[in-house]
Image (cartoon, rainbow, N blue to C red):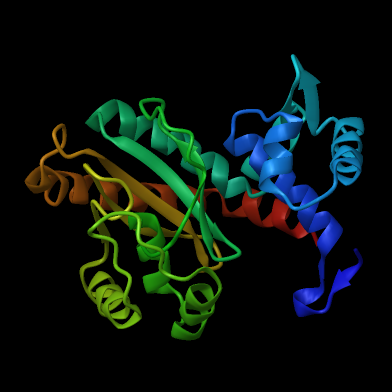
Length: 261
């Protein structure tokens, strides 16, 4: 227990978060499931679970622990904390209807790429991804200073998820340079087999990276030539429209941001 000197991480809090994540990943978990995954005593596990349950973060039902609906409050807070996010949400809906491609808006936090919004035709539940093997992640990395990219790779590595995943740092930096030149990133079956996509960053009103928009889908449904031609143009048009909308709402956005200080 107590504070871990490395990074000032509180180990008890970290353990509770890992338990929550295990419950999420397993779509519910029993006491036996959790005891087999974590090297802790039954009494310690019950203490964690009771604390989480008292806060509404987990519930116990039919002998299993589940993530509580209260987490929706946190999700809504994350999705609405920046006024610009709402502009992106409506634009993503428009692109889905027009091009029948899977569309997502993702942001980088703590070196991982997080899905904030996605079109309704996406049926997966992946939310938190690596940066080095996704179109959004590589687009964001290409816009970051090299020092920050190295920090992200030092912390999260370059885990291989498919045969096409880039696992060499030098090769990744070469790819990031190419992305900077052409203006968009390409995910060639690097995260999931049979899936490819393109992505490019969106700038906020202060010129910083707001996040990245991606278009993609299964290779059998979206051929590579269509992805790299028609949809590249569509992606850039969409980002231009988003950035124009953000600029048009500058007064509202800046006033709301100022109120956060």
